[in-house]
Length: 68
Image 1 (tube, one colour):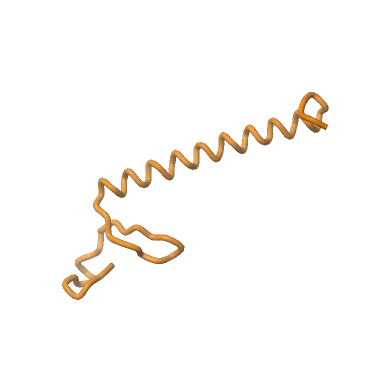
Image 2: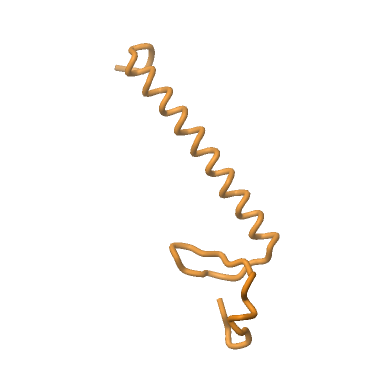
């Protein structure tokens, strides 16, 4: 991410795409914001799925639904 033509000090404040702990590339602020929005949306979907699963499990436990 830091090349010979860039001093490390010049990179402070830059956005960096990190995957499994490794900096993959520098990205601009627009791309960073779009990526953060996608990750936020994924988190909301995960929360919704967890709530649906919990509701389904509760119905099965209470005998009010689900296949046996």
